[in-house]
Amino acid sequence: MTTINCPDQDINQNSETRTSGSDTLTLHIRDKGQTQDCLQIWQNLEAQFEAVPLMCSAVWTSTWIEQYGDLLPYSFVVASRNKTPCGICLLTEGVEQFDGPLPIKTLHLGTAGEPAADSVCVEYNSLLIQPADQSAFINALLQLLTDHPNWDSLSFDGFASDELESWNLALPETSVRKIESRYFDLKLIREEEREVISGFGYSTRKNLR
Image (cartoon, rainbow, N blue to C red; front, side):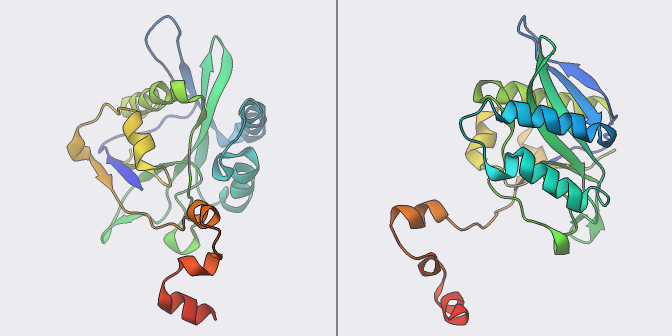
């Protein structure tokens, strides 16, 4: 997980920002009252991709909202070009989030921000927008959030480090903190044609048996 610390910020629902240039990318933040409309946009955009990571899919997102939507404040960030949606992501406000012993106000991209004991521990997170537009999308979002100051940390839960680095985020390095997220490499297991249990450590295999 990668976090961006940004003190004295606030989020304003239904806000808007634009990227520069003739091929303008416009971002809107839509509140939870527009959930059904946004999920329909999500499904329409998803159909334009050959493959979408599970935890970036409309089905996963809608299921997560059904389970956690009453607990966590959330909104949708919709990117449009020429008034046509071209990207979307979920933006949540964390509940019971801490930095050591201190409670902090957090924002999360994707289905994250739950109390630690109830977290689904999102993996393989991503933005539902064409790769060529990802950097513009995320930098415009950061500008939008910065322009509307009351959060302490923005977390990119489950995003791959190399994906984040490709976005060229316009932030001082001192404000970025990376936290190791352990995961199980199913792709490697499949490629090596091994049983899943063989990928665990000795003590875990022993306990499972």
